[in-house]
Length: 114
Length: 113
Image (cartoon, rainbow over all chains, first blue to last red; front, side):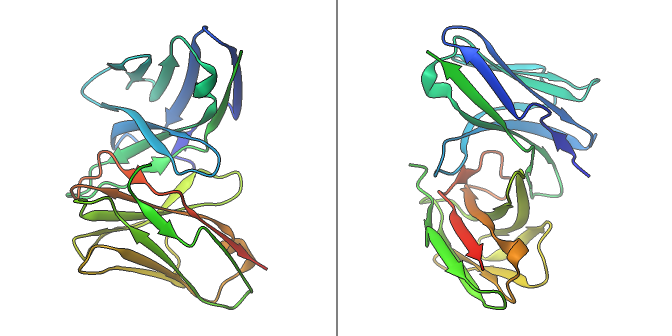
């Protein structure tokens, strides 16, 4: 049972254009969402997060949008750069006591073409 | 560099064997998390330790166990290994028990032959 789904395994975008990565979730207990970026042979790197009390969070070129009614979030990268080419994982977390465990999607490989 | 270190980077072993993966969290982080990433899968949460105590448990097999030591480093022990245990094992750390932002190590690639 995949509680966090990234339905696009890959995405190619031209440099300078917008990259939009999508993520859907099924568990209504999730209240915190994160995006991680992963380069080959490295661990995932935290990129940006959003709490369920917000619908948008922005950090430089990266913006995450959350649509709670649709159980959908997206990551927008504007403008896309070749260095953004990586696998992007969406993750979600419920609050269980004081512990948080992350449930990850299967990832989307973003390729930014020069 | 996230500040989280994992050893070894690669491990090749045979079915039925036992291995230990080691993780040192970022300086000041009290929580350690273990994740498994199998081929074409997202990261699966295994277990969390906070300041030496088990905090949360995910899809961790009974053949697997972990602990966190007084110096806060953690070890993941995998025993009676099967071919299906071949995967990347990541360790992450965070400051508190609430792992809002977890910082990941580079992973240990385990191959069971």
